[in-house]
Figure 1: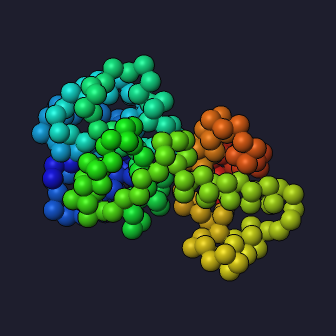
Figure 2: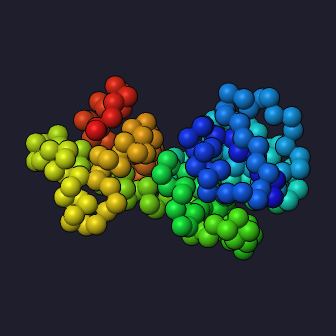
Length: 226
């Protein structure tokens, strides 16, 4: 399969590692986007920065038999294509592409059209990457849960309930999570955590996703917890 990846370096490396050998993969960062000489001939395009240049959707949608995969976390696919001109035949798939979430047993995906489910499942099967389809909503499923836990942990730390180390250790021992909330936040990246939580709050107005002031301060300072 011939695949084009347009993503930042970290996401590029995770996708390449997950897709493995046996595919011809071209990869570019966003800064190199306009150096690409056409999109014809690719079976799939993993454009994880599509929300930053959604006007390219019109061109993508004219590519016959090319599946377009983009991030489905900070923006729903329905919102992404709103007011954009696309062909009805276009297959657009949202992927949970947060750092650390790509290299899992199953891909967490969303669809622009429910009718694309069979095609999406067959596509990921060909990649040897089983998928789980979730609703097309900001935050998908796993990010909503994990980021809400991180946010709550920040409130606990802000209130002086426990230390970072105690909260992390308690979560790993108490509920058998692979990482503690602050460890997880560092692995995902403070920018991704903050911006996704903010997108979730704006979409749902649910207080569970209202960013903790302490987390916002860390984001503004671009600091890690550990």
